[in-house]
Every structure is written in C-alpha cells, then in structure tokens.
Length: 256
Length: 73
Image (spheres, each protein chain N blue to C red):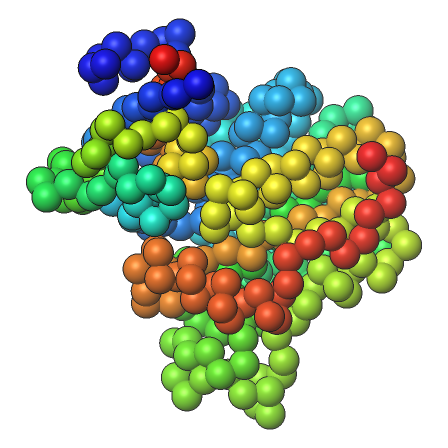
C-alpha cells in the first residue's frame, strides 16, 4: 500500500484543532506552551464552548496567546490575571473564564491575587504553567526554581539559605475551602498529555457547578532557559521536577 | 486486524524539536538532513512501513504540525 493511499481525508485520525489559528507560535522549539495551548483548544472544541470562553493572559511567554487560540482574550497586568478573571466572571457569570499564567507571574508577583481569588472561591479556571524559571526574561530564578538549580541569578545553584525553598503553590491553594479542584499534570509524554486534557475538561466543566475555583498546575519544560535540548529537558523534568512537584490530583470535590 | 498509518508534516511550520522522534514507539520518525525555510531539520517518516497511526507524535507535537492518517487492511 502506498502512502498516498493512506493519506486521504477519510482516513484522518488526528489533526490540528480548528480553534488553533494558522499563525506560527513564537515559542522556542519543543516548548511545553505549544502543547498546553493545543490541550486548551481541544478542550474548548470538545465542550463546544468557543463562544462562551474568555481567556485572561498576563505577562510572560504566553502574553501573545491571543494570536494562537480563536477565542475572546483579555490582557492583564503582570500577575493580576486572577483578579481580572474574577471581575469578568462576576459581570458575565454564564461565561467560562480562565487564566493562563506562568510561575514567574502566578507564584511571584501574583501570589496575592491567586491566594485571594482561590479564597473567594470564584468559579474560574486557573492554568498554571510551572517550568521553574523565568523563561521570557532570560532564565532568572523563579519562586518554583529547584534547590541547587543553576539560573542566571543563581549561578551557584539556588540555596534555601538565601533564596528560600521551591514554592508548592498547588498544595497551598488546595487547603483553601474555595477551591473545588486542584491538580498537577504534565505534557511530556502522549499519556501525560491525554491525562492533562481530561483534567482540563474537568476543570472547565466544574465552572458549571459554581462551587469554586479549579486550578491546574502543568509541570513543564523551558529548554532554552535550562540550556538543554527539548528531549533532554523532558527527561530532566521527570528526574528532577517530579520528586518536588509530583503529578496527580491534590483535591477533587467536583463529583464527576 | 492489521493497520497501516502515515503522517503528514507541515514542513515549513516544524521547528525540529525532536519530541515526536523520542515518542514514536515504532521508530518511524526521524529528523531530516535537509532544512526548511527557517533552517530547522524537520521531522519526516524515515520508515513509513512501520507507522501504525497511533497519533503519539501528533499529540506531543508542540506546534501541531503533524496530521495522522490510519487505515485498516
């Protein structure tokens, strides 16, 4: 059988989601952001809520996310996305609102906003991309940087004596009664990616319950910041990040 | 029942990260020796007869440049 006999529209089993625009992403080769964008697009596609979704993307590598996914977007000041998402959700309670934040944004400058949004229990979805580094600004230390990890601002490796410990935001916010779903996922393998998509669908659906905030942390790679190839970065992530940030559900009160 | 698969790569959008190569369970995909317009070694089917159309490569592709086809024979 020739390849041309297989490549026919009726035999197609997987392709680009219609929600992903044709513009090429500015992310580095192998960046997890692209995979996470794809999961979001497929989730919205599957739930058929394109007209009801509003995304909030603050400062970080994903600041240009509005160029890539064909839904309504709102830009936020650095770290303030959860506060803005709260405002949007209160004005339009029937809409699905989510924020897309990196670890420099959510865990550093935006710590106050995220804690209080989760404490108020607003029914929004928070997507937290944790790559343990400030990727956009050139690989400086983030609050989630692992101990001993070398970055531009910790050339000897992070030490808890001067810089504290890696911050486990998902465990912290899971303690709050306003949070209905808190999970940590990754997108390094096909199995992990499919599991992350199921969690994403659950998080978006939990907004219908109006019971509280849903929070997805995605442990991801920044191969440019880590100075590795994309494949090495995935292996390094599994060996070094997973012991500190183990994937799995931390809290699930959705009931489905 | 045997299945045959094939992938179609959007060569100009591929950034040659190699994540698909690492996640292909049957060793179908490799990075090409030639480069695309941006200078990246794009991915292609080196061993097309091995492809089962499992979609793993397309699922992990950060830039969604791979389309997968599968047919039962």
